Length: 373
Image (cartoon, rainbow, N blue to C red):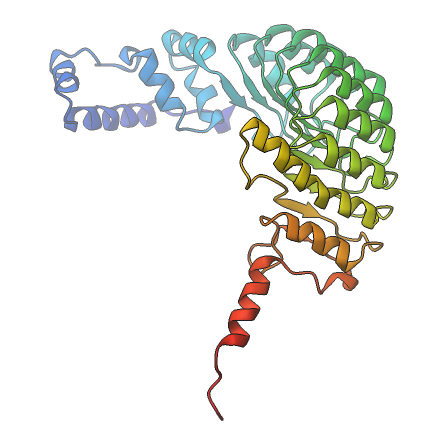
């Protein structure tokens, strides 16, 4: 048991069991009714493993851990059948909970350890890397106590990772991140928001070299990121679809141009507070639609593909004509009310930029005859 706050009373379990039996007995399935008559399921321990796993998929993870203490059969079924586990609900002693629980879950593929207050330490992550070799999704966000030891351990023990969130882990170095990239080559989603030391051009060059399947990268507020890193990334990861560069104050038009020309599947781009971005970057994005349409016709792509979200807030060097060119090139970019996907907060000189929806609505309104007053 985890603690008093997670314990279920015996009468609660029995009540749940009775309700389950009532549901099973009232069903239309002849097989289910016959099983009830034969008394196949008479106690908690008699529930088939497949049914137990389905039931547990409907409850929270705290209840799942509690349920593992009901009987030996349930414990084994949960430990060997559970593929996803979240301990984000644990506000105290998460580190000890990981150390005691994780080694028992042999088939974990998803582990969520998001924290409001830093609790995790390197020894817990090392246990995860040692025991969870099938792990594909790992969330360690806001783990301020973790050091490079954790990244080195994950690199060696969790090579099948496809999604990693280490946002806010400010103690990691770029050398450790580069090391991880060289081993975890199946990464498709990587969140490095706020990793000010880890996210550098050196690390991005390693990611571009080894993580060629990457589709989503968050580099928000990583002010050591420059054009060299982003350009290498664009050339090495052509399947990138979502890139957040908000607050990366060192990047210039060269980064956007590289993404526009080398990443034909780009759908979302965040450039908030990137004040070095000029019209040159916008025209490159607009022109990329033509190139991507030509490439898509060869590959059988969809003409509707293209940028769907663009954040250029506080990019005060941009002019209306350049931004309008981007908006005209990508019909999925909207400035109209309720559908804002072209975000321009703080750019007072761009108020004249409108999507096709807004233009059509204006024309329809002006074409409608107004009654005489």
